Length: 413
Image (cartoon, rainbow, N blue to C red; front, side, top):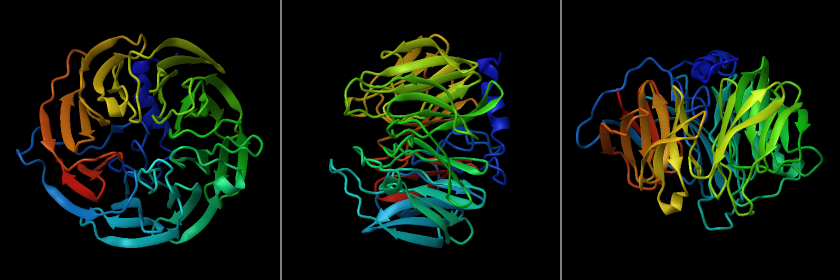
């Protein structure tokens, strides 16, 4: 049996095929190369910064959207909306200059008056830039030129309802397949796999509605397994065939709720979390069976930001974003709260070596040791004005942070 402590290293090795041709310094998709919020680059970050914050490398005005940037091969890929167009832009990582730009029309309207730009972080893999727009259009662009390779209107083809906030889960590229929680109502098309090269359908599975969570991928029990937190709950599928290995209903009791955090796979343990009186749960996978370790709404309920893991401990945000979240350390195997920084506020968290890198919704950078003993921040500096909702990216020691009007690169080396 794999120990949880060996999980991150195992995942890093087994995910090599996912990011073939991508440097360890890059951040080619949501939550980084291994989709767990861990930066494994060799570039060291500074221990402290001036009072006015880390140096700004460049800044660029951007349009609407919650999609964070992706970084690969010296380029930053930005997905945003200006006017009636969803725009994919390739920028020079050193200067922020536009290398190429692709426009596609959109008529997306948010029913609640929120931002109407794209939500899903682009995925850079196999020489392609894969994007999933707010209206459910999945597109593959040539990474070098921005030329369209293929495009599929997932919502139209698979009869997908709009949902509360449009399409938001970033797709998963695993080898030759791109796997997505589509939420289709046309047969068993809740989760679909398409050819990453051509966009043709390879398999479909489940009747689960789409959530706003992005899937994870890991080898569990010797089998490559895509792990989803759908609208209905936890699902693990054989990534090659689409066979459902395990599933567990796990969702809020009322409809107006959000599943947004990505599942964490640590050895043969799976951690999932959501808000709306759902909370968190840890499961052990044995064969094709999920066995619960613990479940609690009082431990670590992630509203939209995924937690990170190090040496037996989870670190993340607890509570509803609008109510003032706390930031916590929680034991993975028991759900015991080790410490809690109350009224901390919302944000996102990465793990960089033995340090937590937090970007708050208010635009602050916070660095602290990843310790289960206490929360003792060593750095707190303002980066940008509020509001910062998009996931940042960290590549080659440069932190790329997007707020409502700009994308800015900060030198943390």
